[in-house]
Amino acid sequence: MSADKKSLSLSEVEWQVILDSLSNTIFNEELTDDARKNAKEIFVKLQKELPRK
Image (cartoon, rainbow, N blue to C red):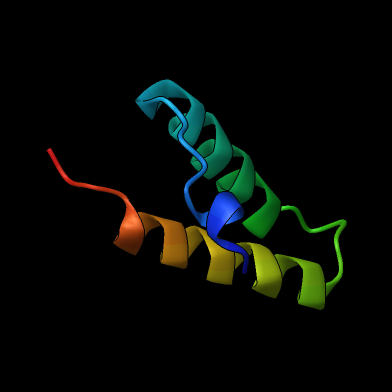
């Protein structure tokens, strides 16, 4: 991933929207298993990388 994409700065509210959307995707039974798996992997990765309060 390029450096400029890694430095993307979003507000806490924006990150929460992303996490909520990924969470909804993970549990959407209409999507393929691969799509749900990819969403879950991104969700877990973002949760680990986001700073904790």
